[in-house]
Image (cartoon, rainbow, N blue to C red; front, side, top):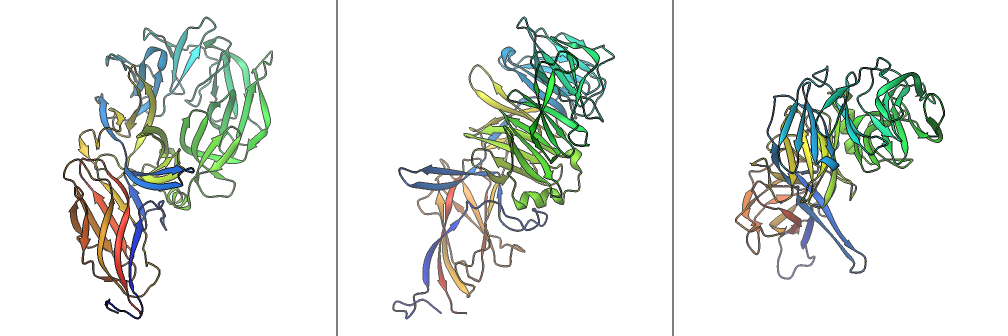
Length: 487
């Protein structure tokens, strides 16, 4: 029915299209259908007193290359020593030490006996207040002092272990590979070990896959359970005792990352599908969505390639989940909302290691990308990755605007920030359930009323917004004017 000045039934309406709905995908993103948020995050603005409940879709922070690549290999592990302002990172069997304040880098050659696999780090504090860095690949365990002198452990009683060392109350702890045993060094000496000094995580019949520390507890993550231990000061053997109360039946699969005393990882409840979990104190919550679970369930890469990392920028902190495949999902730990990121012009943001760096001027996130030994820094003042502009893409849900009747759309207007310079937004639409899009219309956002007119007829409509400019992007929504028919 065409609109006229005196209709018997008013079919004209002006409505807003929401851009801040979280990603929902029917198949975990395998087909590229359904809602999507690429290279953005959702920022809520909430104030109860002012009844302010606005939401913005905001371009993610960019990055710059901080340290040049040293080899065509992946970084195996990263660690920051705050008291010395030093970043440690392992590539091949070498260890690199970068002074954050002076930008001077030192190479420590042939530190490890292996050239691939994870390298784990922790600080060890002696009773004389001297600290060293512990670095291990699971076979070779080294301490590195403030002068960058490397000393390897030569004690035959040190077991081959998972490369995740933990310091607690003057001891160094490691989980013996292929076992449920947690070994400890001698008190006040990470280079000396005594046969029989261990405790077993034996509440369940599984092996320990990694250990970490939360508050004053050592957490043992196994292939089907999570157990907690504390230093009870046992006079012989291990100083640890088990805390039986908070044991959880939950499988650790990969993607581990720690944010303060909060752990994020990919796991599964007994009989359940893989999901993303948050462990805070003794409580474990699933923070994934059905979309994330479906994405992980159909992953063909194997759990050995599942990575997790914490990065911060633009006032938010994010947990990035990679399966080594075609997508990277990012969880905003401040809002509990998910989005999707891609590095440079790649299809994924395959960060495999990240650390928080405190310099003399600020706090930053440094990170490494799989297949690359360069070190990058999150920089909210940039809208590129290492000089390469990345695109923001927002894809909406299929919207019928309250009826499946045939409708016409006379215009769509962009609601959002005006950039400082000319910057175009490509607006496309699909009327066949994401199967195809038109070529779209490009509009300059640096104007009072960015609008596209004459968008034709439809029953359900999907919008795809692509912002490829080297500029900030922040959007609230779209305003559409439609005329609804009767059939």
